Image 1 (cartoon, rainbow, N blue to C red):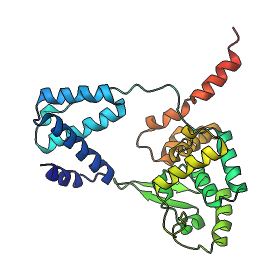
Image 2 (cartoon, one colour; image 1 turned 30 degrees about the vertical axis):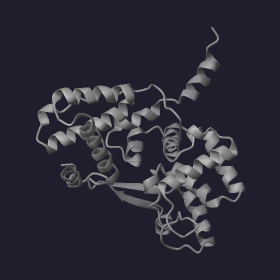
Image 3 (cartoon, rainbow, N blue to C red; image 1 turned 120 degrees about the vertical axis):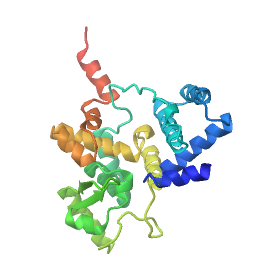
Image 4 (cartoon, one colour; image 1 turned 120 degrees about the horizontal axis):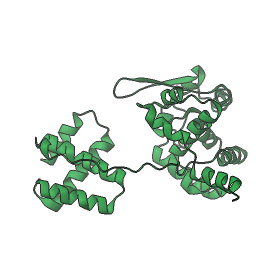
Length: 267
């Protein structure tokens, strides 16, 4: 049955990681409870709530609900748990730390990683999108990305970044193809980027909790709104389906909130 469920998911145009996650969840459920009944489903939901964060709980419930569709027991579908939205952003690298990291990487000769950090922060790219950038895209100043739904998003490469990157590529005699490569001439991986960024954070004394690929995408959004307060445009640039997703960037980080309170509250 699990094999058939996996085939069912594969026809749903889901990402490979999502399919693996859903299959793992249903396998885990069936190992614990054997039968699909309302009582067992509610017991599993209770187990998830006690042991996982709301986002993880909802991911697992989505997997179970997909399975219920597959076995045609949609009436047993479970409601998601409410995710309490924080009124601040967490673990976003500060602009000062971003600039410090960039400066140190360049000074110490870690040029490729200097450009990894700059491209992430100046384009708002997801790490998976960063890995798609080729020399041809740098030359033309943008990269067109198509989502699974067929929607087009243009990832712009700012003028200053483009100019310096072209010099870097010329020094490497790289006129075409992917630009972020490992020592074997193959594309670096998302996991490799995340691990190396943590190592640089430790080396330069930056809080490792704020140094990860998506943190630089957050910094792009924060800096963009600080300089050009157009939420709708930012939503388009980041590829958000809903502008509500983008509103989080109107909020300050916890560190920024603390600094403001420390400065103004004297009563």
